[in-house]
Image (cartoon, rainbow, N blue to C red; front, side):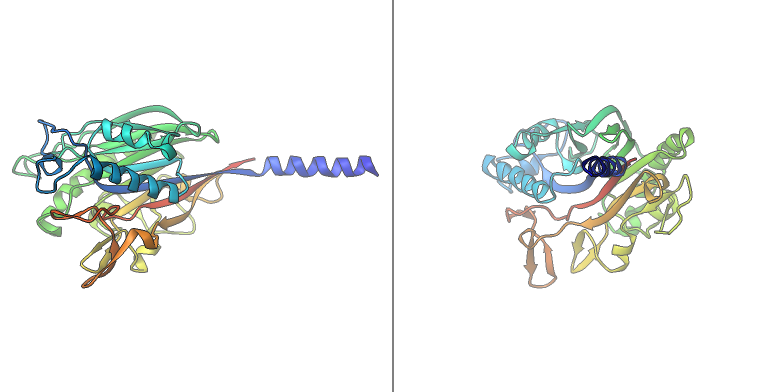
Length: 336
């Protein structure tokens, strides 16, 4: 009898090991102007100096780092975090030096953005092995932008998750809607086309490549830049190999979003995936797309209702978190 029980126990252990999963949380967060106190002569960071109208100082800077740390901890420290609106490697080093964030390293390149804000990827050192990284440079032709204008480059990182899966991660922060949606649209259409070219190169080598495209796109799922130029399809039951899929489309249809503009929620922050990650019958797939929102992150505007509690409104210091809500999803890797 004891031998029989031992055999059953061994079989159960074997079954568990053959069907175990690794679950990795992947997030994107526009942190709203994470600047240090130093004057960068190559960029217009004048709003975030001690001598500026905002009166940026060490105490406010440390509060900003603490607020971002608090958000990441509340999101259970995602394995991968795409960040937007970070000034340089120094602010990222200071962020990763925070007690709860020492598990992270980062990938960052200086871009030519006129304000000096860039994108970056935080990754958990024990769960993500960096293979290589590069940028897709964004330089507008005169036909798109007649006057000189610089924006953020797109960051492309390749790495291996602890489960042995190679993933491509693109971090984006597309041009803003400043000047109006239609007037500013050609800039985002151009950036979308540059991203699509790079994605096509990846898919041309491997149609089943695991691709995560995330960031602040300053456009919604049904805008031309995303739907037409980038070619992102709506959520479906059976994905087509080689195509890109929207993970927040249903939340957008429910009038939910990551950014509140005058009382209207806009889905500007996205995590778009390749068909290989969208197909749940595969060994690696995504689940639970989430707009992260807690009561302590919000404030009630008397005119526009509940909004993210931001750091600044004009020159007024609120000491909040960001004007954007973070978004995340879970990446499931079956270990069969």
